Image (cartoon, rainbow, N blue to C red; front, top):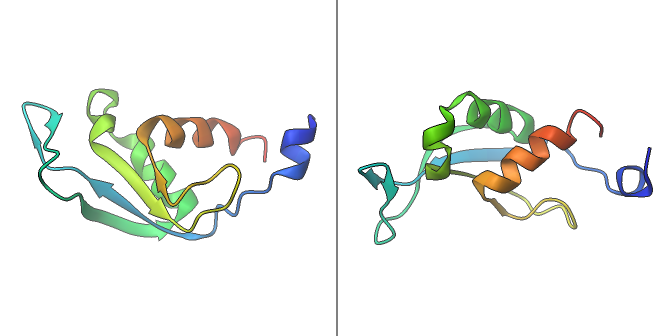
Length: 90
């Protein structure tokens, strides 16, 4: 495996929450706050996110403790999808 995987450890057991943005016509409402829809480990939240229909995933994000350099405290949908792919190798 490459050096990035060997040097970058992600704690998928870290506490995390899955949040959803209020939406109108499948668009985020930026004047509103996101709200928590589930709580668990980072791994569980990634799995819950990936079970959402692809066309609505842009309305979700995961909040967790930052784990530089791969994990930020708020994970965008694109970031969650990338971590989902990476967790198979980490």
